[in-house]
Image 1 (cartoon, rainbow, N blue to C red):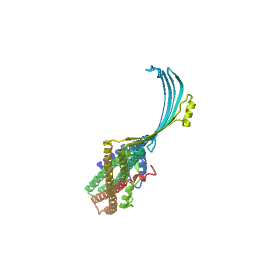
Image 2: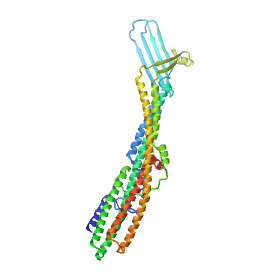
Image 3: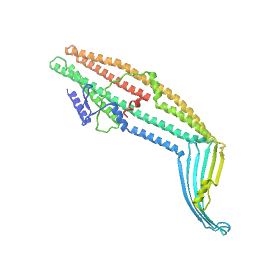
Length: 496
């Protein structure tokens, strides 16, 4: 009796110090001897809490926000620029000839706007006005205004044809951002999968402790009967010692199972980023519904949902567009340039502006600028590199297709295997329970031995633990299947 009492004292002290759950049953409420009442949570509760508080999710979202800034940066090529300025100059320096001006006075200002259009056209509009005065030995010219309005255009038709490269860079950035969004979603789903697996580990630890608790009650009952029978001289001392040893062994296993439960609880709380001082109790039981999809359906859905496949498809688009852009960079620079200006020249600023409005002094210019690189090694090497990168992206896509088929197929077979195994192990549990029940009846009539009862109890215990383990593996295999199909995140769209 000393060893079993000592074990019970140690077990009670453990529960008191850690605040763990001291008794588990699938048909009754969980009793806690800890400082704080345990909080009953479902798997949905854990997932929502983890997403709201996990550092992994916050970092994933920040990565996406950082990637999204690249779109604004790439669109900067089409920004509008305003310019303006004011200049004043007064020149009284001595000239080499008396025919030159002895005194120059210029007071001018300007304002302009420049913009590159999506067509690649560079547009510049500018207005200037200069108020000047010249003084020579022969004559003096009074103050006069020279306002001018001009429009300059430049249209690339070779390299960066009609803005193809500029628009292409923006498209590449948008595709990259879409891939970054998929990366964020995948990191969140990976976290959810971890939480689900950890949650079912906790449920299994609870179930395991419950099974051991049931066997502990049977072991105590058996030892209590043996104590009475030994006092009455109905059994030998070896039977009493056997039941006591069995009781001590089960109590030791309960202690280990309690620690395993606490460890599973802390692992789940770590994934949820939950603070200390809060105990949680899983509200779900350890069972698992049968998979209602066949393998072809799973593979088909995987190709629609797998993010790495979507990224690979998008990456081929990126590499294809990048190749076209790099090939365009090998073209010569051919730019059509044109300019138009109107100005006025009058002492009065209003009259000078009237000349511009009336278009009296027009200026026109149209030209063609051509710049042809002779070697063009840099552009040609970039084009060759882009070609190989596109080929690599296509090979990667094929490799991912094969990977999806293999991963989903293996995960599917894992689920189906455990589903079939559960049928047999559940039947074994029922048979072991029936066997123990019948043997206990015989024991009550004195037709069985303590050793037989202990053996049968152990048989039932091991079979029930195996069944719980199969249920856990079945649950985890379904999580792995859903993770390989990338459908986990879709299950929680309405609650996250």
